[in-house]
Length: 281
Image (cartoon, rainbow, N blue to C red; front, side):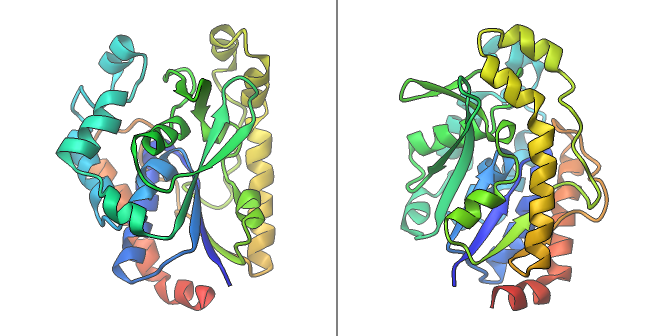
């Protein structure tokens, strides 16, 4: 039996996911692999490096730092979240990412990105946590309009959530018999059409396939939710999601609000810990 993790994004709602994952680490719950998207990837990778508390720690420390994120970064670098500071300075110098443990951990860690030309999902297994893997993580979380393309081997990539927000189908293709699926919206949520499509059409006017992917993202998302529900009914998925809408903006910068979301993830994971262990065993 192979156990997997499916981690959706949601920008700073992703700290709910890290609260859950830290409880898993504290209780020795392990997985054969994960498929993660956007914030689920950049925060969730700490489960493979086994760094409890790292994601909430650096987010609380730097959320109000103009080097980390904000309109100053957007205007000066083209990225709302400063690529150099977030993906080089923090993991190398300020809150070091444990690439040794990451590499030695046999757990697979797939990230989902979107090919910014074709609009199609691309899945990459980040095995070592090196600079190239960090670029794949950054690509997965590079939100359209407020992020520049991430170029890897000559190909431009953007947020994996554009093409595949909840990669349950890909997880099944990897042979995971059971998957823990962590969502960041409460039960009953349905995604609406992309609200900035008109602006996207101007910015990406030479990329019709990407525009089409943005225009239909809500359809794929809602279809994936239904697939998750089917997998849950069949006993192949165990879904953890907030019990109500999380009180944070996508680009939340209040350390107290970020901590509250993280603690909600911890609370729910601890509440359902016995069920989770029974499901995986």
